Length: 252
Image (cartoon, rainbow, N blue to C red; front, side, top):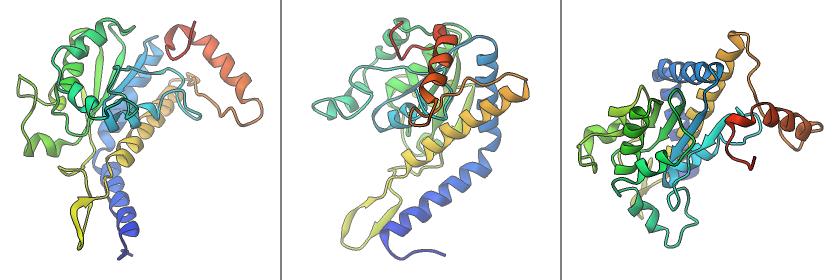
C-alpha cells in the first residue's frame, strides 16, 4: 500500500530500492562476502573507504556491535565526515589527484587484503584512484556504487573511468542520478536521498554473507558484541586481543 504523504513515500521508495538490490545484486553481495571471508581465513585484513556521506556506510561496519571485528576504516583526513570546516572542503578534496595513492602508501594495507570503496557516483578522482591504487598494490577491491552515474554522467578522473571500472566485484545500489527519491508541489528541488540507507544495508548484508561463509568453512567469525549487554566488554576484549595484529582502529 503506497502512502500519499512525503514521509511514507520515502519509506516506500527506500523499501523498493532495498528489494531491488536484494534481488538483483544477490550474486554480487554473495561474491563480496566470499572474498572477505576468504581474506579473513587467509590472515588478511579488511579496509573500507568512503568520502563525504559515502563514509557513513563505511563507518557503520567498523568497531560495530554485531559486526566483524576485523573491518578497519581507511580514513582520508578532511573527507570522512562533515565535521570539517568548511564542509565544502571535503567535496573539493574528492577531486584532488594523487591523494588516494598517498593515503594507501602510508596505510597498513598490503597485498592480499581487501578494500571496499563506497562512492555513490564513482566519478570523482579520489574513489577512482583509491580503487586503482589498491589493485596495483595487490588488494582485492569491492565497489559499492550506483551504475546509473556511469551511464548518465562524465567521470571527473583524468582517465575518464569510474569506480566500477577498477573493482573485482561491484554492488550496484540502484540509486538514480541526483540521489533524491521524491518530488512535490511547492518544493522546488527533488528531495529524500536514499543512498545512505541502501549502501548501509549493502554493507551489512555483505558482512553477514562473510560471517556465514566463514561459519560454512568451520571458522568462528570474529564478531563483536554490544558493550551494553552483560559480558560484552569481556567478549570484545578477547576478540580484539586475539586479532590485534589485523585491527588498526585502536592503539597497540
